[in-house]
Length: 255
Image 1 (cartoon, helix red, strand yellow):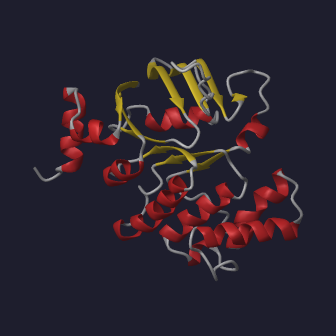
Image 2: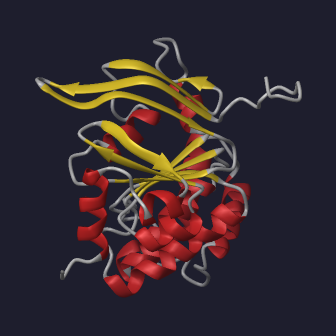
């Protein structure tokens, strides 16, 4: 309840006490995070800090060791949760494109609609063409993935996720496998999605993207959220020595 008596809208993602352990290694150590509908949150931090594990726990590609996750109206940590239904509303884009090499670009985008949503072929292909146009891939529908650049393949992967009509998009370092000159075309698509109001949780090393697009930036280290706030605050004036050291190395690599 807000001060004027109105009810706060439920967050699209609510994470409480999230823990993830691999043997004796506790990768996530009690993460609490809310993500509002339409919000863009960027996760930054050193390798091994738990960023990708956190992302993969949201759609249960990794099974949490403790805590609760509610995403897009689904209690992901309920043993009886319908994960197939939940994942239809949670799109994910990985570092590597994970396209089917033997299928055309059009079929790569349409196949999940046809197999999971049972969409008729003509409708699935029409939606696939629309999504491919949205990410700037026109005239390549009959090409195979190997005939496209890495940046084009990643944009196809984004189109494939969007074709399912998700409420939430998860991006796990989507530009880290790309040559530097191809990074911009993928980030431009992500900026467009943010401008259209897509809710996004993004693991990234692209600080300029985080500064320009994120509503909040979270700095993770050692499996905990060390700092959280607006990009100008976290990226420009970090409060902790750990965040200051990390950002100095990332923003001034030759110093």
